[in-house]
Length: 317
Image (tube, rainbow, N blue to C red; front, top):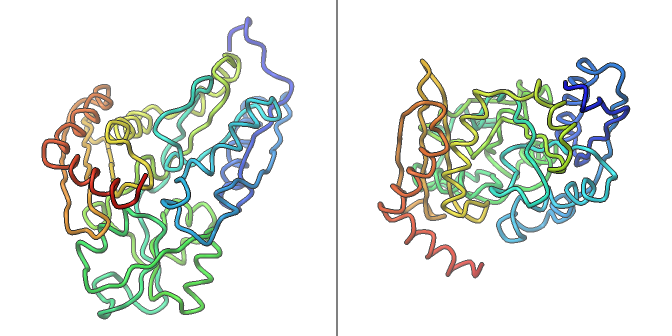
């Protein structure tokens, strides 16, 4: 930390008030306390519009940005210094005046199959109801298991598990990272590999946002930044950004680094899963963002633009 950038006496973290969001904010709080014991770190819990509207699917009420907007407003007003987000909830473009200061090491990026009766997707009888809040998951489910019934599933992790336990669904699909962070790993029946369910952009990683003019905070947060994860997440986000990615689009992108090579996979689908285009690229981790842009163009050349145009017409956004 440069002497020209003094360590702040206090840091206020803006967070949604769901159990998972508060776990994430507390995780970052503990890391900051370890790094800067002289700094007082507290959490400002907030209820966002995305948390309040639970009777409609996210894709119909404006997308996951609804979980972010109020937190950014608290940063802008000076009520909080940083905000902690799930990277998969972050819009592809960070608004002017804000900075994504750090991306943390990724937790398990996979989707989890959760059921009280069945071991995996293959075991589900014809017509079984599977719950998910994600068009990405829904399109992949419909493509591979057209005999299943996919229904929307909103609410926090505990609410979704309760709806499963009440028998409203034969199975539900959740992010493994959230279950593991909440010490609910025992609820995971099976982890879905990327071939079964390609993860969401940024799934499993946390992002820390602050105002762009807070050079002191950006420097302070660098020990929490995980470069390997950042290479992967930035590649995924670059693909999604070119395609106008949001939760109104059934789109997945997933990067992983092995032997210092970044492998990027991505797809775009129609919500019913009947049309899917996919692509895969490998290259150096440093080239990840360019690979993401190239992959988006490859998908467009395969017809992704036509799929997206049809979705836009049907949904009226």
